[in-house]
Structure formats: C-alpha cells, structure tokens
Amino acid sequence: MAILDHWHPVHPSRDLRRKPVGFQLGNRYLCLFRTSTGQAMAIDDTCPHRRLKLSYGQVIGDRIQCKYHGWTFDGCGNGESPGAPKLHTCTESFDVREEHGYIWIKTRGKEAQFPNINPDGLYSLGHMRHTVPAPLELTVDNFTEIEHSGTVHNTFGYDLKRMHEVRVRFETTDTSVRVVNVGPTIRLHPVMRTFLGVRDGDLFHDDWTTYFSPIYSVYDHWWTSPDEKREAMVRWRLYMFFWPIDEMSTAVVSFVYGKSRYPGPAGGLRFIKPIFRREVDREVRQDIDMLKNLASYDTSIDGMKLSRFDKVLGLTRERIARIYRGERAGRLSIA
Ligand code: FES
Ligand SMILES: [Fe+2]
Image (cartoon, rainbow, N blue to C red; front, side, top):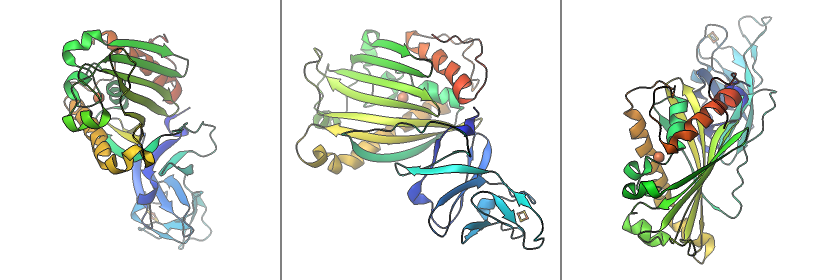
C-alpha cells in the first residue's frame, strides 16, 4: 500500500464549512470541500487545466469551481468546462469519512481498515492537531520512547535521577509494536499532583501500542503507589496519529480521553477539561521543541548510539517501511 491508501484524520469536521480547504498529505496537495447538502468531499487540489489550486476557488452547489477559468469538479473528480462543454476531464477523488469529529480520507476504492478508536467508559477531552518540523520517522521516534521524558516533560514521564530503575518491555506482532514502561514518576505540578492523587515516589505506568495502517499509537497513562495497590484518581488515554505533510514536516493529531474515579458526572473531568487539554498540548509542544533542535534530519538510525529504550526505533522503522509506505523491508529485522 502507498501512504494515501490508509485512512488519515486530515481536518476537524467543524472547521470545514463553505470555504474549501487545501492541505498537504504525503507531499500531495489535496482539497476538501462541503457540498450544498453538507457532504465532505476530497479531491486532488491541482486543477488539471492550468494547475491552479482548486481550494482557491469556491463551492457552487455540489461542485467546486476553479477560480482561474471557471471549470468545475464534483466530489468524484468529474470536471466540466464552461468554455469547452465537450471537453472531458477529471481529477483524482478520495474516499471520505467523518468520525470522532474529524474528516478522514484515503485513496478511493482501496481496502484499508479504519482505525479502532474505542474509548469505552472514557470521557472525551477533545482532539488537537500539531505540526512537527521533522520527518515522519523522527517524529514517531520521539513519541514512542520515554527516556526523554525525564528532561522534556512535566506530567507524563520518569524521574531522571531514577531513570535506570524504569522497566521497559517490548511486545511485537507483525503489524504492531507495544511498549510497556513502569518506573518512578517525575515530580508533577502541585495542582496536577493534587487532582490526580499522585504522591512522590509513585510509579508512572506508560503502556502504548503503535499500529501502522495508518500510523497511530494508543497510549494509556496512569499512576500507582510503589506496591501498585493504590491507583491515582485519573487515567488518560491518547490516540495519536502521525502522518507526513511532506518530507520535512509531520502532522500529529491527538484524540484525548480521561477516566476519573471522582464521583459525579464524568468524574469532574468536564470542569477540568481545559486544564487537561492544555497539559497534553504543552507536553506535545515540548516534544516539538526537541525535534526543532535536532542536528540532523537524516532518518536512518545507522551510526546512532542507541540505548535500551531505543529498540523501538528499529521495530517501528521496519513496519513504517513495509506496512505504511509499502516498501520492501530493508536491512532492519523484525524482532
Ligand atoms: S486552471 Fe483551473 S480552470 Fe483553468
Ligand atoms: Fe515526549
């Protein structure tokens, strides 16, 4: 399969209105628009006439009109020219779904499994999108390894001085990579510590699985006492999707959920939602700041001095190449 053959969350549903939206996915310029009946459509953004971006045009009824010479295209990409009615033209169109507040697209007619977002019993804290100025592989490296959490993060991470105590376990299938980490938590902000019910010396549990069609990681974060008999009041779950905008930038789309043991509707999460959202946003921005400061954007892991936490890099590289990019597996082995 090629990159566009997988389902990707490309744009928040609520932000697509009458005006078409242009965006890049896997180096391709694509266009979203809503017909007069409200249906979301996705087509190639390049007008086949003289290559103006169709997203620069406007929607008329069920068709998008190119601003340059007025040719129009429907959601299946069928084109008409007012100046040459007999001329047949078309542009590529894509399958579209609207789920979880997002517009998802993939190559029309390709078989691809829709990602399994199944937050049973969890409260939605909303979704957010970040743009990382780094290639896909280096972005995934960052979000699937925790050794950096002791210096970079404030909430989801491990005490740097006790990083050597963190236990890390890898479980793989042909199509997924699971990483399970347990160790002494970093010291949280007092407000967060109080609300979550986390004490100094508690263990942070970080258990995630990464899938590759499309590429996304499902993270569960929670805290327990050192003997693991007492659990903190709130758990988090994040579904984070990673897709290449172009060779040097990556979109990270996060669907954030929480579960609280406090009494009352949604365990109080409704009231604290803005704080929790801000916390996830801040943690992701801190990752982005790291990735802005890499000395090299070479995506090869050859020549890196890797630690015990970094085994995941080779595991994800192999699956990104084979499953997501549809390339033959390279020299990296499947552990
Ligand atoms: S470039 Fe689009 S109609 Fe001419
Ligand atoms: Fe991070």
